[in-house]
Image (tube, rainbow, N blue to C red; front, side, top):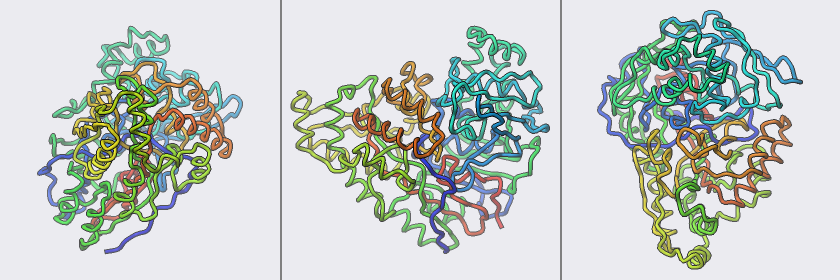
Length: 575
């Protein structure tokens, strides 16, 4: 077995989350065939089941959907090797043509069509803008930057359009339609499902006719949900190199080449994703039931992988961090002193020592949220915000605060996705420590926690434990802390706990407009100071990533950004 080294990143300034990343438990006896039987199929294990063709909405914005949709929906850019923003010239080209005002011009490839033959054009770009700008009721996982652009001035059938910014936007290169959580969705499908023609959909967007768009909005937000079966194939046309081919609920999903794809054909005919719990994936890899796995690492898992013959693996840095989020909407943790009492009892250092250091010996507690520990500026942000003061528990102080509040015995619903051994162990360490201080922590691991109607979306928790997956772009985490218009699954974006602070909103706007990295870091330090002063969330640790694959599979290159292991899936091949 060959062990490869850590990934290096091409560019890195700041980091944090845009996608929820976690793990759920699913039994697996799916029909994936022998993963070693030939080069026509590659099988990937994942620990969360796909549940939406549209992960651009707030409720479906998760890695379990992104790792599938990355292959189905295309755009002008994607997170390439090392997490760097890479142009996708198969889809089209784009360039900033003016600084003042800031204007970025986009040109969709002349041959670009949806897999049903409909042309990809201005109508799709206008639908994308309508959603991402936040000016309509389309659910979105964040509108950073797009809300400050003018509506694109193009006509149906046009392949060219432009975004003109009313204020500068530093991450313009990753702000237009791309792969991931801000991709183009098919306007002709949304129009038809809303009882409109494409012309009527475009007219309603131009006129900002919310009533005319109501049914289209409802379909956009909810109509692509996968529950027991895929949506009808007419609703899920692909703009990427693969398309949906088969699905067995609770077992697997199969992708096949998109015959209408105008770019270079993928190296492997079929990609099968099988849903297998993290602690069962190593056995599946050994049995050649799968070719590739990307679970959260534990000591036991690494030991198991090291013992396998014919397997390569990496442990590497990721733009993913584990954290605890308080519920500011429907929970006693609206009270600052209660948040302080809980923060004092969370054993952050013990969690890292017991669960992370055995896998990544140099691991430390993550003491800010928006800069990765392996990126420039991290130490300065920690020093400026004082985040390291919370690394050690103070049970006496925690108990004192509970007594002052007359809340000794306060029940805490600790919500997270079920079936993840490391997260379960983390919850048990938190319960053991905080119960000693006087809390009554209820461990609520739920398989449906990340579903659109699950606990995270519906705020049926007091403290949520999950992870953000992001990139080196400052805009990737910005919406996470922006005040929501209302605390609903559709409207709160990435701000799941519904924290609101006008001063912070101003800083979040400022950092998006600042192109100088040093000046950006100064603003981030101010943001982190507020987040710690208000105890909005409790960062725990930066995830060490791990991936393992059969040594006859070529071009598997783990990625620290949110496109994860599948960023170059079209290059995978079996020899």
